[in-house]
Amino acid sequence: MLAVIIAYALSTTHSLQPSIVYSPLIELSHCSVIFDGVPVLDDVSFTLRRGERWALIGPNGSGKTLLLKMLRGDVWPTPTGRERRMYCLWDEPSAEPAGSKEAIAYIGPERQDKYVRYGWNLTVEQVVTTGLFDEDIPLTRPTRSQRARVERVLKRFALWGMRQRHMLTLSYGQRRLALVARAFVSEAPVLLLDEVFNGLDERTRLKLRRALEAPRSGHSWVLTTHRPKELPRNVTHVALIERGRILYAGPKERAPAQARRTAATRPRSRAAALDAAVRPVPKRLNGTKTTPRRGEWLIRLQDVTLYRDYRPVIRNLDWTLRTGEHWAILGPNGSGKSTLLSLLYGDLHPALGGTIERAGAPFGTPIESWKKRVGWVSPELQADHYLARSIEEIVISGRYSSVGLNERPTRTDRAAARHWLEFFGLSALRARGPRQVSYGQLRLALFARAMINEPELLLLDEPCTGLDAETREYVLAVLQRLAESGTQIVMAVHDAEDIIPAVRHVLEIKRGGKATMKRL
Image (cartoon, rainbow, N blue to C red; front, side):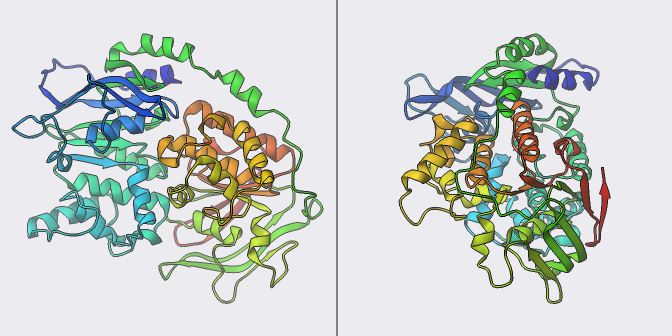
């Protein structure tokens, strides 16, 4: 896959011009980060110069996010006696990041999750304005010219109409776009973009790619992605990282041979991943399913309207999920896909006049009984479980549909967690905290959490967000195998490549809240 990404970047190379070698903006030399005696970044050296635009490529858990955090100064290298950092973003070079962070704009999943964790329900305009001063919450009053700059950036990214809406009422993709605008409003000469395209619909991805490709004097960036088609055309350099070590860092035109050698030595080949994925689905640990007979309805919606921030996002929806069916939900950012899944799961309720019926859960049944029959995976769950003590605890919490645990896990809890941790290749990470694993590894933990009760229905909100190509292929193969084994799947996606073959029904939500249904 690394070779594919490099080949794609090279295929879109602009004509090469003689280049000027600038002095480094940020330089790391022999830097390591060690968790529990295991190097997560191992003797890394990396230099970013003015005008360079880097694609940072590597599988889940390779250390990409940690490297970006170290570049910004949010993570310090483990003292080894060899490490050195140098920041030359202002006139005087410094060995410490203090005073330099405002010159480095960062976008990544963890920054986005902070708004959920801390309840920062700022307006979009407030969020973008904080980018002028590298503040998390508004502390500095902008000048007239700065307010004008904020307005231009809001309009550039089609956010002007929602500038007074609050972050926690937006969809995942809309929040990501607000953070993109926040980064672009700053005068920072360096952008660090960690899977910045995650959660964005195709129209918004194109707008962001064009923004990154637009000429800007002295502008440098480092971007991570798992999908080749997301790379801007003007990438100048490539860094390949695997198992915490940088295998290549240099001009992209010199990278393909190194990429091919790297891809040939990946620890889990495509064939091995698929072999693991099609293993027989385990026997149930929790008794007999209560699913109705095939063809009968499992969930039925009638005249359902859903509101977010006092605004209707879905209007007058009639929809039935019958047993044996698998559905994809499509629609642009903010159309209501995640809101609909939250309704199906039981976290939201229809507006007055609409009804939702769940088979085996008549009116008055505690919603917790229904949730134990349903597996749930979404980007927001990663923010909810950020303070968990371990990956194992996150997985066990799925037994109780809870965030965290109120009581010590039982022997049965640990046995079930151990099984699904092994199934998703996470056994070695069971004792680590969520901040000690990659975003993609944490997503796999949420899959294990969703499966721990062996549900009859899986609700998946952008399930492949943050997954590298081989892990994505592995997860999709697992989902297909589960669908073939009787687990029903409803998945909200932006990319048609993430729809498994078992899906034969599509619910597409248009802007304005109207929905249409079709068969594939």
